[in-house]
Image (cartoon, rainbow over all chains, first blue to last red; front, side):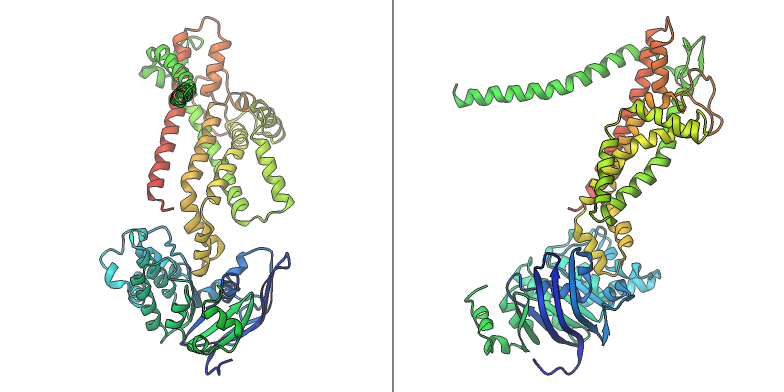
Length: 256
Length: 281
């Protein structure tokens, strides 16, 4: 375990399983550092996506599953009874593997979250649109066509729009599940560049779509295998000097 | 037989089958238009019937049918769409919801005359609405509900789950996601179902027979608790109950009913395709 200066999220002994007894996560404990990019990686079925979705309670939508353990955000249990789930999801944004613009224009996509939260003031919404799109490195490309359908954008632009859409809520934490899996190398580079710029203000957790990408973006790296956290380290130490045999096998391409 | 000949014979048979579907529809419409078009004039459409319905117009029946469609919509759309939203978005898969779905499927198979008798028993007699537009509309609404619920539920389920997840991830409540993302995308399908259901209601005779329809009422209904004439029942009456009825009036009435139903159908298709052009998946 790396020394944590400033843990934003504490994941404490989290076990998650479906009702048929199939465990997805087993006793996972880890602290996520604020203002850094933490990478969750591992082969398919390692539980990394599930863990990501537990952090903003998106798995609440899945029926027939159980979770034990605790997840603390700024020291507070996000699964405490009576906690405000929409409010949590505003603080913990999520970007999915496939960009999925909501029906409507570019502008409407960005203002969707703030409007649901009750923001009505046009001037404020305008500011949100410009700030979010700028942060997601998309403003210059779309500022003249904010009222065109979001689906008219290219795949890479759509993914940055989805990032902007999450940023519009001014979250503390941004979760990204293979955000570049559907993108070409140039768009991928742009999204990664965006992440580096966001790191200063946000706590970011990324599931990369390749080991190479993990190496490029990681401040901290967590390796998962079959629902267990195998190794957790600073920067790319995991890749250069893995302590666990299974990590080494995976990063050197012996399986996965 | 060589395979090219086989191909040609098969193709010919399939084309014939397709034609066989279309031909009766064209023949029915053609026969009614040819024999009924002569009856259509301004007086026929806007005047009340005279001389034992053998002259004058069918205005009260046209208005009656439109009023019944409106009344049926008012009752059936909120309940039907609401039920569909519940079943698709909120209900878990339990024995109760399975029973509800089974009931809906079975309701769709009940003969319309049974709905008529049910409406007579419940709305006209037990709830004492009398033979009235309210009783007729509610009866037609119950008959229409299965169609509306099942098509609307299907349309809602066709909207990919990911849209709901995205809305939730942006801090939306379940209802906000339904209201702002799911419903707009399901709307074309829902509208189609609603109009299909209403079309069936508009053309039915049996359910209104005991609940609202007047044999001969040469004035417009005065209130929701009034009886009214209606096109399908009027057509039935002048075709079977009035000796010496001029055939042109019978066919003319059929033509008006047909035109009303078909034009609603065209409107439904137009709404659907204009929505579909804006859809993105």
